[in-house]
Amino acid sequence: MSPYTAVELIRAKRDGRPLDDAAIEWLISAFTNGEVADEQMAAMAMAIFFRGLDDRELACWTRAMIATGSRMDFSSLTRPTVDKHSTGGVGDKITLPLAPLLAACGAAVPQLSGRGLGHTGGTLDKLESIPGWRAQLSTAQLLAQLDDVGAVICAAGSGLAPADKRLYALRDVTGTVESIPLIASSIMSKKIAEGADALVLDVKAGSGAFMKNLEDARQLATRMVELGSAAGVRTVALLTDMNTPLGCTVGNALEVREAIEVLAGGGPGDVVGLTVALANEMVSLAGLNADPADVLANGQAMDTWRRMIRAQGGEVDAPLPTARFTDEFTAATAGIVTTMDAMAIGTASWRLGAGRARRNDAVQAAAGIELLVRPGDRVAAGTPLLRLHTDTAEAFGPAREALGSAITIGIEAPIVRPLVIDRIG
Ligand code: URA
Image (cartoon, rainbow, N blue to C red; front, side):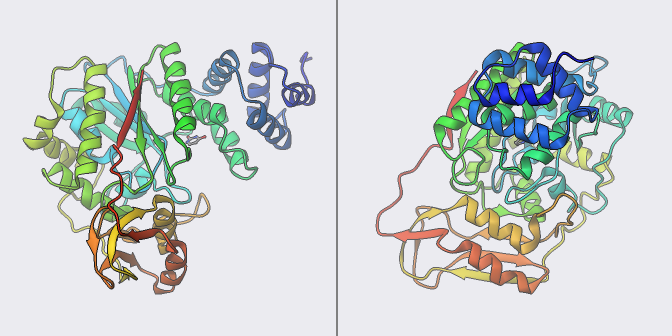
């Protein structure tokens, strides 16, 4: 007989009393095996949303989530393993150039990724726009590719922290996603179970991010770095701006195209800058002696990308899909572009077909948005600001509605905010 009942633990958290370690361990394990009902765990998530988890509770909650599943074992590899996680943003295609770049610097990069939901895109959805590319690998294939190529981007198996998958599904429908301890434990349970030696977190702050303000993002980053370090994973976080989309493309194939431009030595400055900033942190945590900017410029990262895509069946030279319909979103007045709101542009891209509303929806590979201008650019009335891409012409209306006043045009140049706001770790 368990000494605990879910309802007593819910009441304790609701009333602001801390949960002891044994209670947390029981709760997570009983939830995973169905003894604690979904509605009880949803109530607990809401109690945590309001009351939080202190550091001891959070560390225990995360360990208990990890204990519900298996852990990857990379001890057979000769290269140091290093991983990256972004809390999600609009136009965030950084993993695509970053993983092969780090592999070309000498690391093994196991990027176990997910699909997009809502206004943020998923790395697997992006790569699936490459003809033939497959996301599903067995553990043996993953290890062989890490050994040979050094980089793998593939679907995370269901064995890592399975409690998180069930809990996230509940949080998604009960308004409890936006809780710092629940986000920190959700992300870090999966990342620690993934078993890399080192981890760099890209924690986004701004309209297109989970964390809308900088102080919340800083708190999330700090708590995640503490969880990683306590678990023996060398962890650093960069706090980065997500008020404007990253780069000039949002949407699956469009973002792959931009990532390839970066690997070819071009691409937008913000995408290149953030890729190199994260790579510098990863190289340093992995103890490697390489200069990511050089490895990007000399084509070695591109060679590794080609090998990484081919290893997973991707036709690396095949043309990427293009949309059946395009349309332009133009400036109503003349002036200087002051804001290009990431949330509104991400939502519009999703409505064009690039994202999914429910977990099992299909996405359009070619749908999305090209940013034809950036904040600070001077425009005339009628200048095209965005190019919208979709295979379903009826999506243009809802996408335009989502764009609303996403782009503001003023008379003064906007203040240029740094993309990397701070470093924690
Ligand atoms: N990503 C996750 O994996 N979990 C969260 O709770 C939020 C973002």
